[in-house]
Length: 552
Image (cartoon, rainbow, N blue to C red; front, side, top):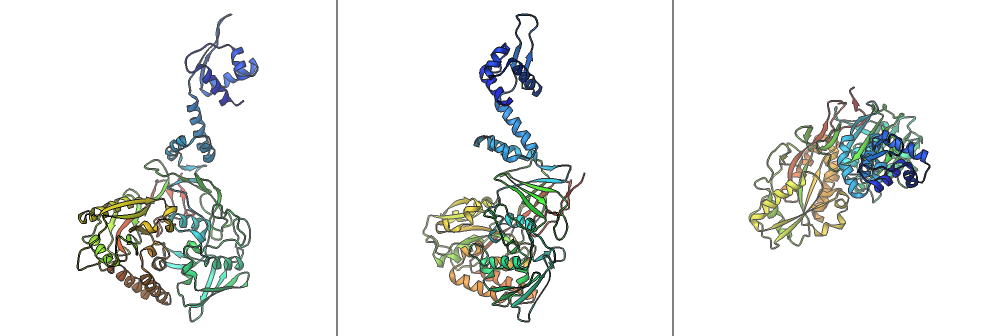
């Protein structure tokens, strides 16, 4: 019987009041010898669980007083497990109510450990997947970039595309045939070779329907491996953005052989490998053979804590606060009207968007700036109608997911609808449910969305306007086809300036015709302690983990 279980029996028998049991009674309670009972009492006293004063003289019994309730010992044991990083074992000891209590105490255990070579970071929710083909959120894409590599990478300092797994690439005069050359000696985390066969299979995999962005790769006809270190991509359409597509998290290179739980425990080639993935945490360990350089930290543990608040930690990835390192959201939050909503007939889309847009519903604050366009600094013509909206429905239903900025924006929209005698029913979904729109789309009248571009804003805009994310939920078939045609013509433009002009034109008609209403540019970024060094904020407001280190 374990010492903790013996103490529980002792507490059940005597409680916290001073008592005078003899060793025979304790031996009978614990079903052991009197000698062993004496040893166990001594161990409990060393732990501080009880006070035991031996009786002096014949006939005088020892006095025993228990100083800890068993629940307190449970909690002390849990805290000890947390100090040793054994998060899963700590949760397994507790029932659901106590697990919530444990969640609240986790931030006290965040920060550096193991002599400054390991870091613990809170994240607000578990990643839905770590399979690059299926990632569809900022958090997942950021984690995938730490675990996997891509053929090309975007240099946020020089704002240019740089070699990564591929050291060189070139295309034909038509922009339809692209050839890539891989670095020699590349390896995945499990030691298997990262060669042209793995790269070719990874790219063809992007065309599968379970990839949220599969439409972006529909023009990939075939991939031909010439030898172990080179391959060619044959496209059905001219595409001067092709190398930029292959620098996205979605296009990460994966092994030919993948386990059944690849979405939870993937094998990549990036600066960190997945060492542990449980409902409570994700542990990443440095990959010693990374093609560029070894990460400066040995490990990073991401602990899943819904509300870390202002507790002690070394790094918190978040929508920014005025106290952290922040930047304006590279795109915007925006509102969509669902086509086919019975409460909003097609002829009322533009009048309703005009009413919601004028005057601008969002005021400038420390948390956000009003959005006049799809990107900060852009201004699109606002939707304008000749008559106010005339809706017969007494209420509209707005859907959004659990992003911190959305409740305030939804409340502002509700105030704007109130003079029309329209009530706004606001429904917040968990991310996993929101991004499976088939389950709720038919019940939505309005949809609140957010877009953050990655470091390559050129391709980020193309990806967004290609309608592979939530944007498509607000477009009619005709509007979707028009935007798809615009993007198809744009990808055939080799000149950056011509593409930028095309993005602005697309934004002009999307906003002026009431398909999309930009609302705000939120502050995004991170909060970090002064000890943490190597921070370089990327386009998504976060920092790559490989360059992080801790000052002593």
